Amino acid sequence: MARKICRIIEGRIYEKDLDRIEARELTRWILELLKKYNEEWYRAWIIFDKYVKKRETEKELSK
Image (cartoon, rainbow, N blue to C red; front, side, top):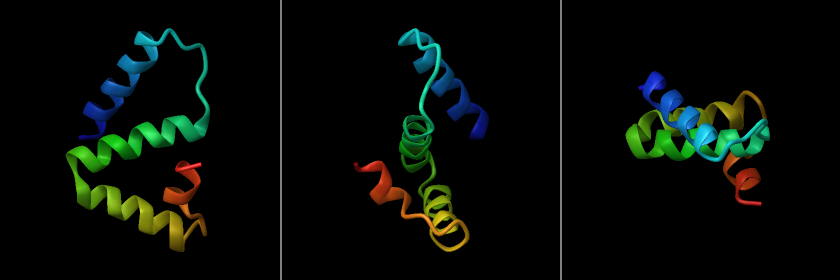
């Protein structure tokens, strides 16, 4: 699954002809695809960020 998501994101970068991408945008893309393909992994990421990294990822990305 990780490789599939990586290829999709790589394709987006090439499609948009980006030289660089902000971490927030990259995280948004990854979480969007995780939610689509594996809701459990998505939830695990959100929980990890909340309790281990002390971040409110979903709130930060909605800005």
